[in-house]
Length: 75
Image (cartoon, rainbow, N blue to C red; front, side, top):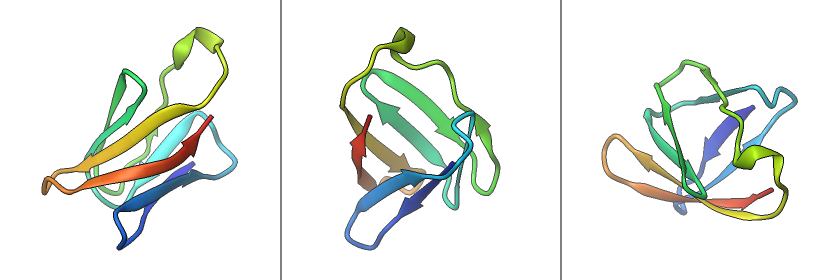
């Protein structure tokens, strides 16, 4: 999957591989209470989230430069 960030400080996670996540910027992705550190230009292994429970969770990405992006609808 890829985390795409937009100029309006929003982001979107998309793509076919749910086990890997990459982003063009380094920073920390927070999905619910889980934090995932992302390195610029490298794929990170996605941890098991929420012990398999389902639902919608708040998500943000804080870039290394301090900018915060709201990630749209994470399920």
